[in-house]
Image (cartoon, rainbow, N blue to C red; front, side, top):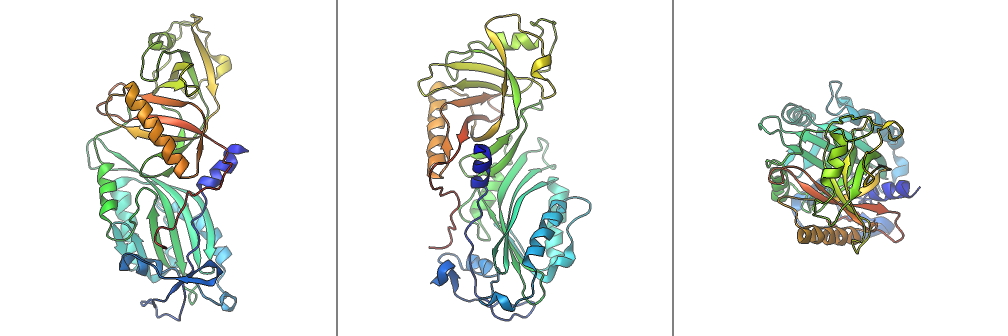
Length: 391
């Protein structure tokens, strides 16, 4: 139950931006003052291009006159968007010919340009698109939340890029089709086109840092901000021994001994990543060092350890926050990263549990280490999503 509530909190839709509407020609948008809820008008501040992009999301002040089936369009997007990058593709007949597409570094004004952008991403990045939810957020506005994982195949190390965010889909009241699609990335503040911050966000993810090609606990990235990731982990099994400190290696030989055959069946088990060190309280009075076992292993069928100093344990999984960093992890750096992560989580209305984990790999110069904390049920009003362009 706690994880379900936390999951919905992370995926809360951004507040609806209500936009005035007048009759439009197919290729012309009328700009009007933008009232928010409770009929309180506000003036958008900031870049004119962002104002224009938001104005594409049309809302009729008298929605009862419309015959557009917005609920039907919500259901349509649930079925259609998962095909965004597969061989089937999206149904382009649901879009106006002059659909306006904007993200922080790309813009197109026609359905052909929109489809060209999708085809280019498929060719260069092999994207995997995960749709989390679709909601009506205005009489002529639908908001979607998604995660997109990509691998840039032109670089030899094939860097992995991850973006999470929301898309505001504007509906043309005259045609009942989508006339705009505006993307907002969680990891940047300036989402207007052309965003230098957005370009830098892409370039940062092209660096030569890559997780080793070994099995790792299964997780889904729910949200990736500028400072941390929120992940949903499936359960996994660890072999663990007592450690001495977060950045220490005490007990490592014991746990690796188990997987190289020092167990009741002399069974050798494939190596996985990462190596976890977990502190169970703030005083570091109890620390364990852990190696994750392959996902197909079952706790009841595993060989017994030969040493009393090690044990097997199932980690039930759940929602966790992760802060990645490069370079060698020292005790001071790890504690500093944990404090920074907790501070960011509290600022965003998320409640971390006591304790933390450090994840390490065998080549700290070419891989990301990370600090992870599990998240607990929220007991206070969150401030996770802000509409930064409304002042």
